[in-house]
Structure formats: C-alpha cells, structure tokens
Length: 79
Image: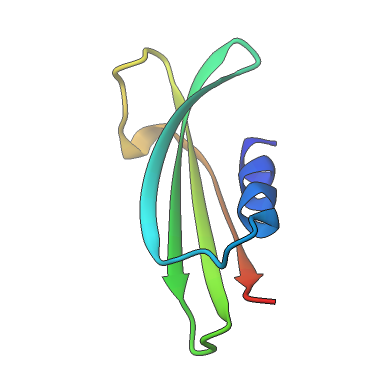
C-alpha cells in the first residue's frame, strides 16, 4: 500500500514529475518505513518512469538495501 499510495500521489500531482531521487521516512501500521522514489526520463518527453523502493526499518536510524521489501514501478504522463 505504501508504494501504491506514493505512485498515486505522483500521478495526481498537478505538475509533470521532474527527474529526481527522494527519500522519505514514514510511519504506517505502527511500523517505520523508508520509501525511495526515483523519477527518470524515458524516450518520450511526455512520459517519465517512476521507480519506488520500500524499506522496512527496525529502528528509525537503520537503512540498508537488505531491508528492501518491495520495488514498484510505473509511468506518469504530462497530460
């Protein structure tokens, strides 16, 4: 749900998503999570790819690739 919610957030934004990478900490279902969002260009200038990685954090300062539980990708269009 975390990745699906983030994907919907990006897609319904009023602006076309620019290429970037962001990291966000959040609490969901009384657990700590980190979501890494990457927006990358595609061959079509009107479509960008959205790559999301979700990590489960056992403590608020813990973050490593071994905690990745999900990768999710999709696309967002300009129009």
